[in-house]
Length: 251
Length: 304
Image (tube, rainbow over all chains, first blue to last red; front, side, top):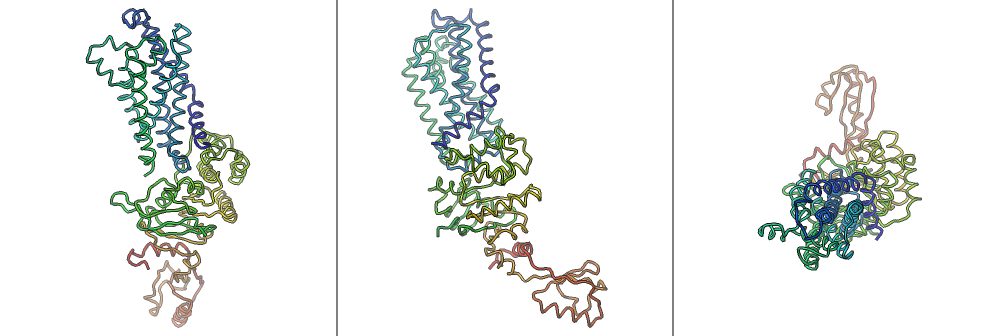
């Protein structure tokens, strides 16, 4: 337990010591999205009936910040440790692969939630938001940040260089996020794109998260919960196998 | 008695490259053991397998009786490894690093021991300095400190004095020797053979993934009777009686290889008969370096 807690705490300190870059910067960039998109699109985009576009946009931006930062945390920590070589301190220790997994994912989850809370606090101060069900909001924030934290672990293990990790971020995470309905309701899309959106696990996280605020969503939150949980379980299994077998980290 | 390190029929292959070829090695508790060999001989691979950083292709490795795979938690708790690469985590201070490293080994309150290590390794005044700001020698010593936080009974040091200046090297060895006297088993690799000769009781010499020599330091150094008789003569050419004697010369300074002391008598009598004056004479004892070079020159088939 001490081993897990120490690694978790170390991972926490790692981003907390540079919180200007790891917490405040992403909060600021999310707020810029809000400012620009609400200004440009508020009059043009029709979402859930009476809900103003800006208010609709906020939960999407919050969960997007949660997801991106959860991914960034574990992936950048691992790749830095691999490249500088200090991963050896963890590899030489008696920490089990499960402890290593849980520590990295928990710290990533926490960073995701902190950034998300920051975005929410500032945005809600300008544009008061409804909150239908705190349960669904918290559940999807947790599931989503954990899922991206695990994906970050996998990307960090697979990548040998920073540009490979950047490719993960630019060619997988970013398109999946932007095409998941952060900025729009998928009901406004042509049928083909609606269908494709349903294959995107990020869609379910964002849709379920938004349901918590408005009580309205494109799909039932129960289905979203099941889809996201299954994705989390599958991808965790993959990450745990990698850590257990020592894939790319123990030769 | 459970061996500190026990390696049986250990092999490691990377594709076609054989890094370790069927190694057997036992190190007993309390030994001060040197692992020598040229670059690429397999020293670091062997250490990495013991530390769990690399998996063996074949065979088994145990630390204090615990298998490094099936009993990895117990094995790693008993092993402190100082890696060869100068690695560090730029986010933390010296003390933070040691507290974190203790935590990884399940130790919560380790302040007294951390203070003691910092003192011994001359890092006490750097405790609150960020690791990034340390010099190469200090980073090396921090790595040693990190390997010791959990008071491991077995300590492996891979090139611990590379890049450490002479003064500090002395105090470092003094500290490690003290740890050995307190009962820790110490295994080290080094390129400074005189260090190994001065410190270690037993040596294994690795060559191309195999153990080319394994003996006590005393026996190994005495095993070769390659003495050298260094003579400063009044002439730079040897008399015909010694013309074919193995050795060489640099002007009037002649080096003659001898196998035993009686040969000295023979050489001196030939010189006397030829009327050559001996201006100076020195007998050079074989040292670890001579032995090491000899082992390296012998081809694999010639190793007994």
